[in-house]
Image (cartoon, rainbow over all chains, first blue to last red; front, side, top):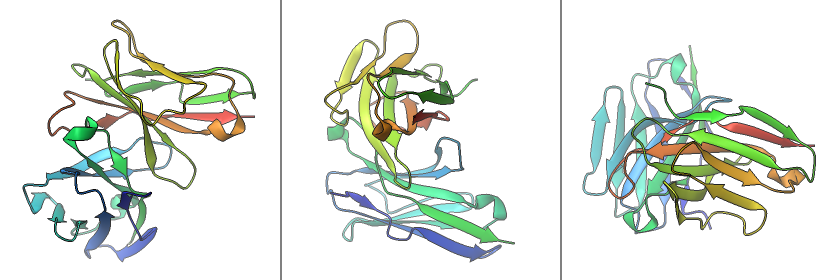
Length: 113
Length: 115
């Protein structure tokens, strides 16, 4: 029972272009969404988050979009840089679950120079 | 300003031994979460603790696993009588508060290998 799904296990993008990573969720109780970036042998690093009262949040090169009716969120990275190559995890939480995070399975982003 | 500290980074145990994983949260954080990542999978929630209290252990296996977060010292995840299937990366995260919108910050993880 995957409540958070990242259907693309991998994505390759040319340096300077836009990277779009997608995430779908099924639990309508989720009200807070986060993106984490993870390098091999390291812990996830927080990137950006969005609450369900918003539909967009921007931080530098990173923008997260939330479509509640479709239960879909996406992370846009523009322009993409080789250092962005990592696994990106989408995560969701709800107040009712004491803010535990439910993670997707991740998308490996490779930015080609 | 140290982040979340986990030790050891790597732990090798023989089947049937005990594994103890330690986590010191970020300064000022009183909420600790443990997650497990099996190979080729995402992170799975195990347990959420505050000082001296287990708040939510719905993701913990019913047997052999336990966790604590004492008043003084790090949080400990303990696995008794380890089996090969326990081999995974175990991540600890901490947050300033648990109820509102707050990011959880992760440690570098402990990679447990059961041989």
